[in-house]
Length: 86
Picture 1: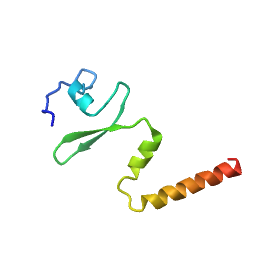
Picture 2: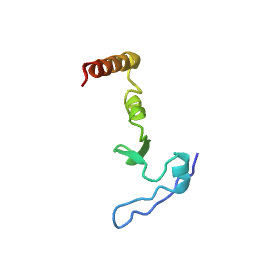
Picture 3: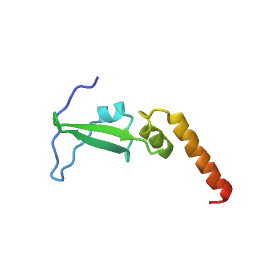
Picture 4: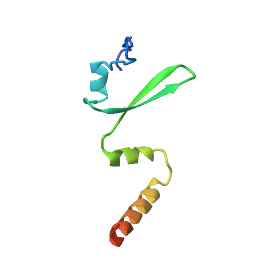
């Protein structure tokens, strides 16, 4: 586990994610992140977002039951669209 750090907010309201943390999260320049605030303990949570739209879609359904059924239906619908020439 990386040690916690204290960062200073810039005059533009920006924070720098330390290199060790970026490396641990495998973040590259231009990476997208999802930020959320836990209002109970006033913490900011950061989660890297993939630039791969398929991986992002899969992650949206990570906690959904019967996701195989949902994906199968989505693929069938997409194949039907392609077959119709849409």
